[in-house]
Each structure stands twice: as structure tokens, then as C-alpha cells.
Length: 261
Image (cartoon, rainbow, N blue to C red; front, top):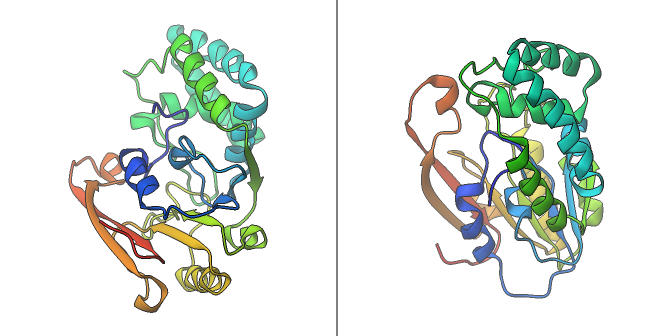
């Protein structure tokens, strides 16, 4: 799987493990309320898929992937070709994105910012810096990646909404995968933070409905009464690119069903 958009904290390295945890039971729908880079969508076989996020530009991008992949390539190619001659294209694109919030500009920025970071300041503006030695993915290569992803997300409905709003789609046969923003990121990689008490209430609601869920939650815990299985993995820290080190961090997977590590 090649990522279509760079996303800090991507679950691409453990996507297969997450897929293999799901019980082999009948599934009415698959719901992913923090879609981000969509790593776990790639091999999802559910007949009905709902993916959401509170970031309008990200959801706008995913809807382009689904419905207008050619527009993605034409927009990116134009910027990329100019960027090869003039690195200031990054700065003008960043300024335009912060004014107009074009989802297609977000893709270009993610492919040319330092270490591929999507980062925002406290005002909600994209503020990652230019990676001077990074030419960005070649449009010919990106075209194949976009086409692959577009074919795989045709069953997905992409919604701009909070994770709490997705509860309306959940029933007892749903699978819900939750990869919330890392606590302590201070909004650097996400446009809003996470209130953990509200998140725990959401998990309790899912338990009462009777669906199956999986949560990846960095180094943080979930109250014991909410889950049945806890799996701890060591992964490269999602903040290593910000902090300039290569330390590993614990990635914790929780499920509300019995599963094998």
C-alpha cells in the first residue's frame, strides 16, 4: 500500500494487524470516524463504509479521490512542474491554502513540506515548512497511486462530521475503527484536540449498542470497564519528525471483543 496523502500517526505499518483482529462475523457496515490518511480503508471489504473527519479539506480531498481523481493529478502536476523550477511555489500555495482551504493544495503541501508533516498553528493555519531538498512525488507515480485508491474507495461515503455524530450509523453488526488524535500533540497535527472523557462516553455508547470496535490510542489508556483486549506494540514515534529523533513509542490497541495479540 502506497499512501495517497501523508498523515502523521498513520496506521499503515499495522493496518494488516488491525484487519486481522476483527471477528469473522456478519458486518452491516464499517465506520471510521477519524479517517486521516485512510490506511485501514485500503483493504476494507465491507459493503457499506462510512469515513469521517472534522477537517473539511481532508474530506474534500477524499471525495476528489472517489469522484474526480483526474482533477487531483492535473492540479498536482501543474504545481509540481512549477515547483521544480521555483521552490517559492510552496510558500504561495501554503498562503493560498490558508485563505481558500483548497483540498487539492493540501495534497501538494503534504508532499513537499518538511518530512511530509501536515501541521497547523493555534489559529488553524497550515504552518509546516518547506523541505528544500524534497522534489515531491513525481506526478506519473502519483497517478497510479490515486487510481488505485480511487477504485478501492468507491463504496465509501465520506462525511465531514465529529466522531460523536457517527453513532447514528452504528448498529449491533457494525465495525468501528477509531484512531483519534494523539493526546499531547497540542493541535500540531490536527485542527482540534480530543476530550478524552467525551471519547470514553462515546465508547460506552458503542458498547451499549453492541457493535465491535477497535481503538488505537498511542501510549494512553482506556478505562478497564470499556474494553476486553489490550495489545501493546512498539512503533516509531509519531512525533519523531517534529522532535528530530528516532525514538520508538508504544502504540496501544484496544478492542471491546476477545482477540489474539
